[in-house]
Image (cartoon, rainbow, N blue to C red; front, side):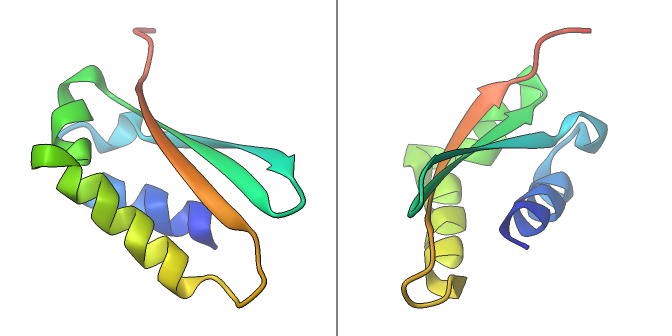
Length: 82
């Protein structure tokens, strides 16, 4: 659910929505790392001015998780040229 939300939301703000993808790594039972890959041109838009956009995404995710559920660490990376 969280992965789907992030991908769909970022696709709405990205200039290259076809390049948006996400991977997840379970670091421990209460922490999952989400690696968001976007086109290099979209990095600034996804992170936002002073990190406000990515911070807002993280706030929505933390507000929607069930009490006692896993926490998420979100990182944004440029997708390698294919």
